[in-house]
Image 1 (cartoon, rainbow, N blue to C red):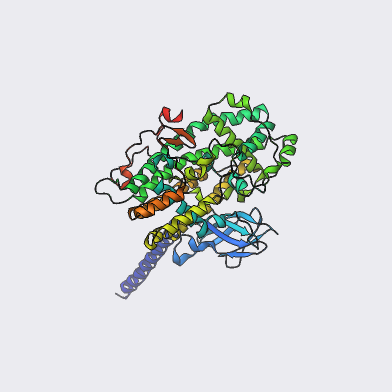
Image 2: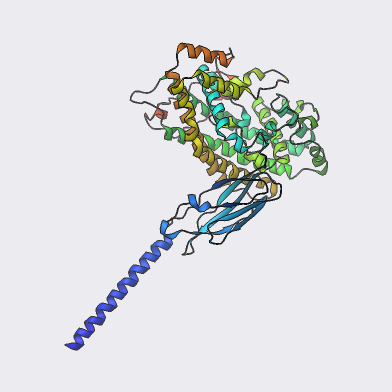
Length: 529
């Protein structure tokens, strides 16, 4: 009997021990295999010649009881990154006197040896006196954003559907530094109608036949994509104007933000395709520059129009292309110059009106320059008119506009990160690296989602203001607009066209399913002529 009891005692103990081992093994395997670690991109600001500690883990996704460590960092382009003791913080030190955008990458590792994805940390290093009027910091500032959004509200409420469609082609696939070059021009010609053509004509003047042929071939491929992009903007603008006028589907009370952002994500697939393939071709040409070509461009300063020779337009080249193709070639040539002479921070930069471009602000600002040689587009109009618009509104109406600023902050911050990562990837076409195509496409589609979120917010707030305007207020706003021209048709970018029939947009209000082709619909042939 004693032997039986002893056997039972040891047998029970053994089985309990085995059970505990099994439970521990299962727990360990679950923890070691469950994919719970996601490193998210970060953005930081600092001053010239000043090191800063960055704690990127704070916005990453991980199990609270198993906080991972930073296992490695890549080295920045214009500074040094060091993982500090504890492996939770990175010390970033910019190169001496460097200002602008810098970027490096990091990944996480947990106690089981499991790695996260690799993601970026973008740093904007400011001059100590913050003297620059044009920077990412200025572009996303509350003041710049408010005046720009208010200007868009003025243009939208006092404009029409045709004016909404006017859109400069340079705001598409804009990762090549041209906007920054325009804004910082020391000669004051950045917003003159000759600026783009002067830069492009000089580049085309020095290119050999093989290099020109690459631009022409790219234009023939991408000109139809530009047309499709312009056409697929129309349903968004139709929905926004329907919302402004109260022309909503039955049982719908507002725009569906999720549907709008899904649509703009699809729309931005065009932007991704244009950007990626343009970078490949421009990089090939830049890397084939001869010594003489480099000397010629070396005499032309990035930020000084006065150093650019006045070269005649290449009429022979122009005659062999359609208007859409020639506009594309001129855009490529001008951006090749800004990309070659510029930098990462120039590529990342955007002007405040870069987003929410569906409300007619560009028509109001740029129309006077159309067919007007050597015209200077006002750089004060946006701020002055935006401020005047806000001054006409009552307290409640003004609050509808000012409340946009805090609501869009996180989206704007993410956009800066995206633009930095995309610009970094695309520049590999110049430096000899391999562009991660999948990453570029995914990031730009996310960019589109964010633009859609912000644009839906603008449209909603503009409509709310419009509903409560008095006749006296409307008259004051028309006076501030100070532009009597009202388009009868629409625009394919800046080229007048008959307004095509826009597909039904009830789905933008949550009424019915969004078509599978939404945002990627082939433009009718008549729209591209």
